[in-house]
Length: 226
Image 1 (cartoon, rainbow, N blue to C red):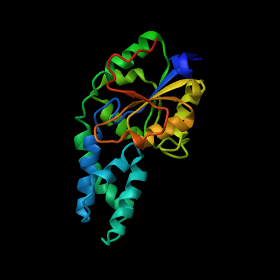
Image 2 (image 1 turned 30 degrees about the vertical axis):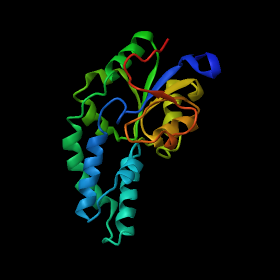
Image 3 (image 1 turned 90 degrees about the vertical axis):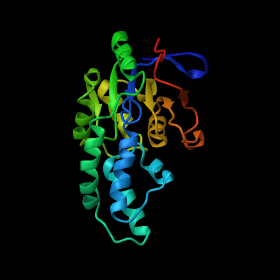
Image 4 (image 1 turned 120 degrees about the vertical axis):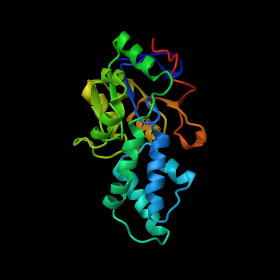
């Protein structure tokens, strides 16, 4: 169980639950480019605000949102499968080269050194995680994983399910965990699960879009865990 400090903040977590995209790996520019190219094929130029709404969500949920935007713009109807068929090859090419976020590898190593249980709580599918993680062997230290296509996952972010399931698999209470996120949808999910939420906020995303009570990080480097 995590110990509590001032104002109820945990001095040391019972477990750390990590998002992947935009938090441990710098994949969000690749995701944005892939969705932009796929939508453009159907005549829709995705705005920065729309791309922000896609951040942190499962691939199929994103496809449904883009599909609705295409149809709302009086463009021709498009099926989610058709949209994904265009998007996936672009995404796979770009994501295979995504670098680690600064401090990410050291943070995972520090958790491992301290014996703090870890889980991945990601919206990405198992296949996509394997593709992105291949150049980063240090991610193998996170053995407990909940993927966006996990058969036990009912709803994707911003619903709390992915964090609740990750905590359950580690055998700890979500309220005793630290969750690390970057997107508003992910932070909402972790907060709703009862986690103490640490947010590595990307440039251009207003703090007001995040739930109250999150703890802001300027970097993953030097994150104190004890």
